[in-house]
Image (cartoon, rainbow, N blue to C red; front, top):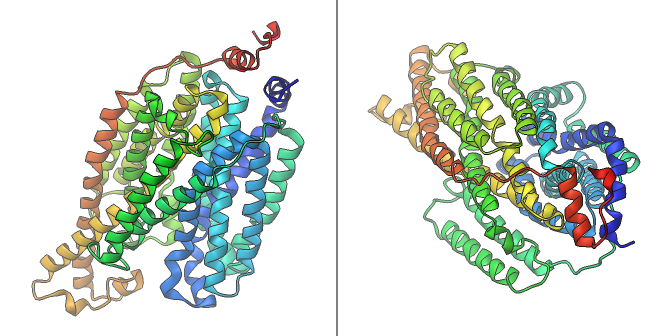
Length: 522
């Protein structure tokens, strides 16, 4: 029995323990999702303890760069050497890096271990979704999407709360140490209940392609991280990184077209579902991450909420994502159709972001909550459905590469969006403050550099500053609307392909292995 024929039995055995496996996958996903939010509230304490305030942003950036750049590599390697093995390896990397991060004695060590964490986290994010694709056919997969949407919603709410608790009651190091018992539990659960085929076809890994991809993506992400912050947008450093990044990625594409086992198969781009989903995912990530990040600024600066209160105020957004993820999944399973959901989702998201551009200083919370709920309802109809559409149209042998590719475009869109809207907000705030203080903003000094400084301003000046912040944020949200409208128009181009059932998937595998299909799979 070869590896592909053996694929039928282990998967069928895993489905018998589906509840346990889903629990293990959700716990594994929680590891990576929680780590993106739990660090934020501890950053001031970390820099006070280790020093290096000027390196604070790299604690977050190092994770982002490594996670985004490594995502396609994990997907392809899992196609070659087996999903379970690679998922367990990514958990080991993540847990080991978490332990090292908690033991860091200086900022250099912490930044390095955070990058290693990002490599493990990138693998967890994409491989969990790929394992689900291995176990559950597209027709039934949507009904489980809400569970994993709930994981992200839960991490967004409890992450800042746990970070604050550990920092105040124990030590900031526990925001990393907590991953160790969780990771061990996830690893053990995967070992016990997840049974997927172990592939014995040893094929070479495209290390040169991997290096080119990581280098090109990292250079372009550094443009978004450093542009307008460390260096001027038109500085030789930023221009050089941008040109170099594009050149390296062009070389990567040329290389991938010439080898037998590319990290990112270029044939994926001949698939219209993959092309359209990638474009929609990129734009949705661009507009979503670029706008949501400023909701927290709005609540903390303009509304005077604490970080914990701001996290709780985001609940309507998470509720919207959770409810529509579950509802759309159930409807897709019944209807066998998915195209309408990204169309509805991008339309709702555009409406929600437009409503947020009308918040202002005195907007009632119910209005903000409604805007966030509508945005969340839109995102819940888009994010998982795009991955589902891609997985439905690719061969099982390309499932990891296709899933990681879809995730990669959304992630890199979010990275570019965060930087772009950061530049929009910074420029607009400077313009608003200049209009509010015709004599020059020198009288403010560094008063707008922190929430505490703004609170210390005289009431009359503070009121003007808050108005300037609100108008700058409104403009930032408004600029995001056209991007989401473009995503809405692109969603109409997404092909509607019949969702596969258990038998469809089994037939593909049986045909590929040239074995008869058991009637029990009907």
